[in-house]
Image 1: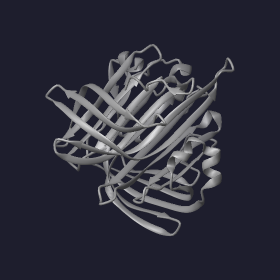
Image 2 (image 1 turned 120 degrees about the vertical axis):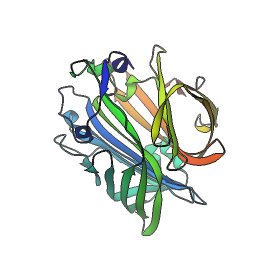
Image 3 (image 1 turned 30 degrees about the horizontal axis):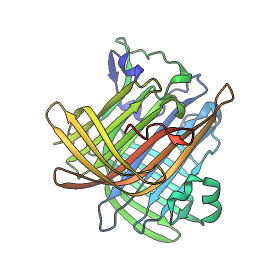
Amino acid sequence: MDVFEKAARVRLDPEDEYMHPLEEARNFNESMYFNLFEAVEKPMGGWFRIGNRANEGYAEMTCCLYLPDGSVGFVYGRPEISGNDKLEAGGMRFQVIEPFKQLKVEFDGQVCLMKNPHQMADPKKAFSENPMVDCKVEIHYRGVSPMFGGEPVNEDGSSIEQKAEEAFARGHYEQHISGKGRFVIDGQVFPIEGFGLRDHSWGPRYWQNIYWYRWLPMNFGRDFALMASIITQPDGKQHIGGMVLQDNNYIGIEDVTIETVWDENDFQKELVANIRTADREYKVEGRVLSLIPLRHRRKAPDGKRLNTRITEGMTEYRCDGKVGYGMSEYLDQIIDGKPVGREKG
């Protein structure tokens, strides 16, 4: 993306694990995201996000749990907030115990329990036809890798100027992690211990400022993991990247192509990712085990209604003879009822 291309260097300090000063841009966002998957006989996992939009007076809070029987517990809210001093909203709380090493995720609230998570394509119907049940989550995370990313800055360390109305993030980093804890859903306890990925972003953001993207975080164990992404702008310009974790080191990804098999709803159900680093090529095959479609809508200044769809798939991956788990997250703007990246990746 443009902010990376203009950067003289990328800065990342332990202090970046904590909250950043609230900027003037109305669409300033500071968010953290965590996922976790356990490779058991019937895989399970989940992901959690809080995104503070303090200048707009609310946070985006999401909890999504993929259960062994194929059902999904999901809730999304926009609880009111008055500042950007913590990531705690709507019953969810993120804590940094030790920067880059230990973090904690907690949730205490209710989720919509769906046997068919595809129903969330129509949220009003999904929430009215499925039960809301009590849910508690507690997960302790530990970093198993170096950090990847940071904030692109000028040579003197100053921030790069962005047009807030065109931005998606000023700073962003990711890390592969291990996690241990439990989900308690409608009184049933689901212990979980496995691997995942987390990220942290800050700066102005509109979800509609990316035309489409494909984000594939995956884990094959403590010593082998990948994250591959393709981010596409409306003019067709792309930022392709990611990393491969091997022997506690990250190797940068230089190129990615993704071939997707779509279902009748234009949701991803299978994929093949061809990933190239400076050293070698990786062929990764993915099979979506459970998927929930989400949406984000916004009215543009000219009155036009903008509709973004994000399909969140818990995915089984195969690479180099290993089996792993993670997400396939596909974001598309919806135009004339179709995802704009449908024929491209």
